[in-house]
Length: 96
Image 1 (cartoon, rainbow, N blue to C red):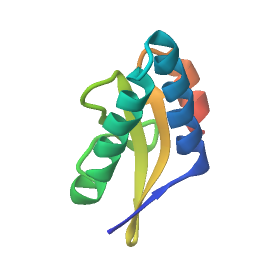
Image 2: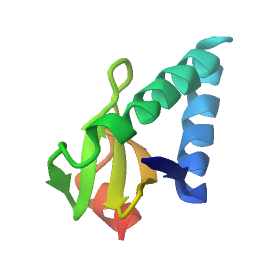
Image 3: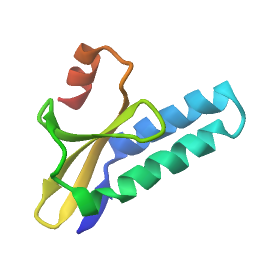
Image 4: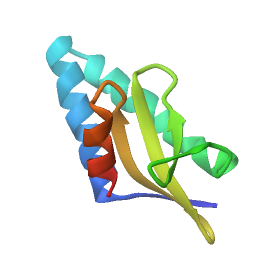
């Protein structure tokens, strides 16, 4: 199964990277590497996660982030990578 990361999800990863890099040098790299590792596992477990706001959602293992994706014919499409500490109304709006 193919994996496609939409530009919106790439932007979310970049935003998270910048946030964590401001907290401590090198933490942004650790964040990005950890989330990419979680995303890379999606083709194996695609569709097994519950739906939230109309998208499948899996939680990142090391950071308070959720990965929102859909399963299409031969691809897992990552729509967003969002901070779980955000207001649920903001998350819902972001995913529409």
